[in-house]
Image (tube, rainbow, N blue to C red; front, side, top):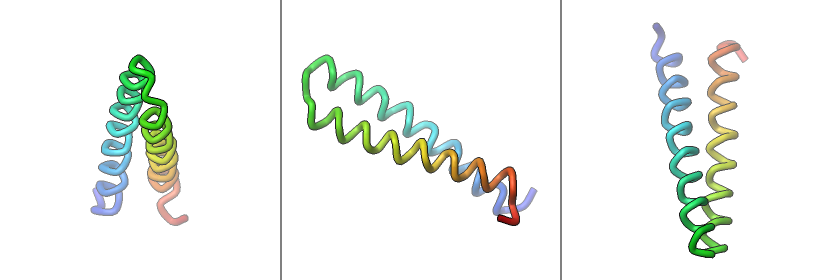
Length: 64
């Protein structure tokens, strides 16, 4: 397995975990009505979701 492939797999894992943790942050802050924190966690979750998709695309098509 190439190091580039392993790096992309690590990126999927790390960003996937971050999506989960930011989702927990959203739920936690929704319950407490901390709207700014909800927005910040939401933005970070969106970025990490985009990053997961980017890493997955790199794994599907390594020459792209």
